[in-house]
Image: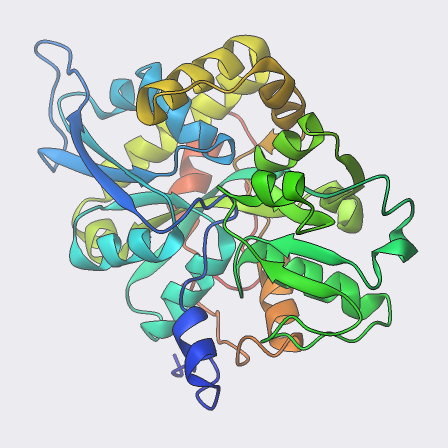
Length: 368
């Protein structure tokens, strides 16, 4: 595999510093928490090839497969006597660092940090082994200032961070409107204001931004503050689907413990099946997990619309990840990456076949 330059080398210092901080789609800040929590193992359960598997994910609704899978014991059930140790993260870079350091073995994470982590290591540190969620991203605006999509021109619109998944999507949408914005500074026909999701609702209330292109539950928090959904990003994609969360694994762990990885994937597939069959109970389970992790559950006016906009699925929607990478290149935020080998869907397709489900495709980006 040829080496890929993950980010343009000749950028300003500020941009070079910022671009590696490619967040997952629902990132909140840049901290991580090694929970050190181990799930309960049934007495007499047989261990697989590893004593434990360290799993990382975000305390966000787009990571509900992990939230619910751990909360309901669906992942642990498939692992038998192999214990799950969990760690939660608030940003993609810290999760990628943890994967590289061996602090986690498997992680739920968004497309941008997956691409960045893969290309920065010249394809040596991770594989995407499954999908998890699609959707859950919206353009929410102040209806007093913005009444149509054309009204976005000249306004101040927040995205979570320079170069993150939503930032790239918004810059691409701007370009397709025929407007000009400098990708690095965010200045131009639209002012792109990079704002941490934690403070975006306050920025909206203060009037310092006119809207935001953000993931759930931030989008629904803005709606609860009087904002209006002007555009659902899903409407811009074929079949209204695009990857927002996938599952990655350390290549070292995948090689050493394929049986453990397969068990986690089996648990993920069964969790998604349970979520889709029991949406209200699953929503409540996810909220309970969020409350345990953050100390505060989401109110109904936020979680109800947010939950409806997210689709939980096993397909990694590989072609949309490739398109997202192309959008980042077009925006000048990424050198054209070589993504060949980023996927290894062998074990996922084995699990899907055993469950009587259709195989999924890697869009030609699979490991040889």
